[in-house]
Length: 299
Ligand SMILES: Nc1nc2c(ncn2[C@@H]2O[C@H](COP(=O)(O)OP(=O)(O)O)[C@@H](O)[C@H]2O)c(=O)[nH]1
Ligand SMILES: [Mg+2]
Image (cartoon, rainbow, N blue to C red; front, side, top):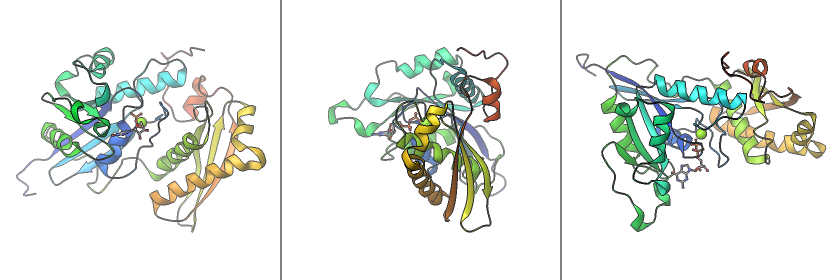
């Protein structure tokens, strides 16, 4: 950069219903597995931020929990977090699977419902392009992109659009940073991802993950994690017969964390009961969720 050129900076929020491919796209854009992905909807509880910098422009992609009609206090907190992320963003990418796209994508109707006045800073992104058959590919309107987070198709064009539309301004983060969040956060997320892979039905949704200790500088790195469930019966299920379930979970999670940190990890998992944590404001706050006073317990 020559110094006479000014830099650009933007927060770019990914909007859309659960399961449309927001997290997969974020990971593809930053080239690193930051956000956990799952075929089970509503696995994203926390906002994940991935940073993409070049000489001129820094883009911070924000992957919020999906937009949906909440039915308990945890879900209200997730939706409020998602709405705030969209409101604060400079650009909003409105995602919808290409296989479901009609003339007026439902995702746009969603955005108008959740956040009117967003359309002028928004692009429509039709995801999962790899699933379309030959004759099914839609002709795409301006500021509409057809992408696949799996193959990478269309992603560069989308990123270029974000760069062009980013407002002038200084970088907020070090150009070498991949995320504004720390390893502790990502370690907890990877334990949750393992939980979604291994546990059945309601159990992964009833499991909150907290990193209690992350001791770097030891070899292996020592990480103690507490998994909170809502009921004693869930604790039993999570531990499993002879501790088999928690042991398997620990193995899968440890290997994910080792890939992320590039070092050997000793993962110490503990299961505790925190009664009804998904519906109690104090429990949710203790677990790091923001719960406003306006949000009332619905159950
Ligand atoms: N075939 C295909 N599947 C995708 C694509 N993007 C996401 N998926 C799958 O769709 C599911 C939901 O993806 P995820 O990124 O977790 O969605 P999110 O809830 O919007 O964050 C997962 O099973 C992904 O593997 C894509 O581009 N192509
Ligand atoms: Mg997600």
